[in-house]
Amino acid sequence: MEIKRLTIEECREGVFDIRRKVFIEEQNCPEHMEWEEEEERDSVYFVAFSGNRAVGCLRLRPVEQDLWKMERVAVLKEFRRRRIATDLVREAMIFVQTETPSSSIYAYAQVTALQAYVSLGFTVLSKVWIEDETFIPHQTIFWGTPVSIPVFLKHQAENSDVVYEEYDARHPSVLPKIEAYKQRLENLETWNIRSLHIHLEDLVVSKIIRNNFINFCANSQKFLDGNHDLSSDIMKQSKNLLKIADAKLNTGHFNEVDENWRKLYALVSFVQSFLLFRGRRADFELQNALKIADKGLCMGRIDEEIVPIRQLAWLIHEQLPAVFATIHPSFLSISFEKTQNFLSPLPNSVPIPECCDEDCLERVISAVSQGTPLLIRQHCMHMPAVRKWNIEFLLKELHSRTFPVEIGTKYSDEDWSQKLMTFRDFIENSENQRLYLAQHRLFDQVPHLKRDVIIPDACFGESTNPDDVDMNMWIGPSNTVSPLHTDPRNNMFVQVHGTKLFRMVSPEDTDSVYPFDGILSNTSQVDVENPDPEEFPEFSRIRRVFDGVVNAGDALFIPQKWWHFVRSTTPSISISFWFD
Image (cartoon, rainbow, N blue to C red; front, side):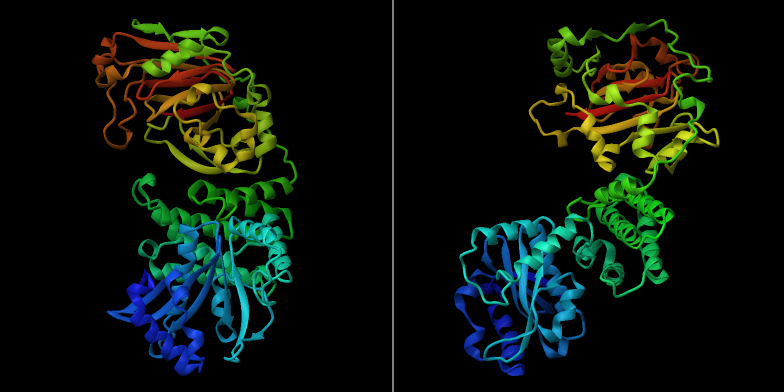
């Protein structure tokens, strides 16, 4: 079965045949009610084909700005009970979501088909009313998103003098129901879980998995509506779907996984977390709900306007009590761990060029344009994060949040691994492991921390859009190491708390740093603190390596493809701002 989006001129004969057989012959609708040429020309049609034969149809008609009316949903009798009508409605919803995302849909649904619409995410707005001349019972239904519903309500407020039928979605008696629904969405008291299926592509996740997801969402919505217990069957469905998505995420390189599997992981995580949040009876259930939401944020990817998983995680975390944590000595400002607070100079070591923030604007502009490193002293002392943040502050803000943590001395080692753990467990480090929360998009996961961060001006060239700047966090104890490596974009590295040592090599000397083959081709094999001249003789022939110490409030411009090694000498918090 294939569904096509067409104009009336592309499908007139087949669509009219379906509508004549279903509405005029089967349901005895008056023929004069069925055809209106102007409406036909203005509409978008979704037509289901079995081979070359049109067997089902749906009409979307624009009735005003940002509002569609769904009409003439029909399937030939011999092709019913195959989910064709459901698929037609789903395609119409996808079209509106992707092509006109600020638009909503309403329809006059025949009562006999009402539950099919409800199962896809439509809300019933009216009591049963009888259509004139056909005498068929109908109810008015509506579908919108957190983006489109406010737009719909705004338009209706502007057109308050227009008169509508009492059962119309725009009638003054109906609008308060939509307004109340909008408020419940904004407060995360409910969510339209049934309609989340429109964000998954069948060609990727398959119809079987999509239908399993639809069933899971339907059962979840019943629980939220008070018509179903939060049974083990619902949680089992979610775990099975997460298991499927997780297997796909861990097949091949993570960055090459199709976005639909990330969406599935995020969608299921949101629903599972939301159910636990709404049905909670104890703090441990809130903690479990938060852990699930954070895993969805770390492993999945979804637009916050589709499911507010970041908002949900923040709301749950705010309701959890503060926790006591015994901070591991390596995270304390006075650490008992022996740390060398300087790099032993090599014969070819020279200082990284530097300037003071007060008099170096032209030098910063020159360094960025020419692609040369520059250490800018006290460049970010005005940033609130530099004044406020330390390990204790982040523990208060993030104690029960879950993040991906590196385990091992450096990521190029064979015994290096990653593990998801709460910030509290990370700071306590009860197993005395070498831990590092490295290069994590923490601001995507915990956006409220952005209020303390100011993106350096140098990151803005032709674009002034902050979304074009990738921000990554680095949080770790003393003696964390990032081996000599390159970044794919320019990097303005800001030290927020603590001190780090840098050793840098020009991209002109790439062959002399002995990059790994394959996936680690941006990483050097050389231990640049103690290079072995016999194993890596070309490294000692590099004309210059650049060394520097970066303190709290300093910024280091690292040009794209410049090699850089990093070691922390104290507990450290850093932010890298990648830009073009």
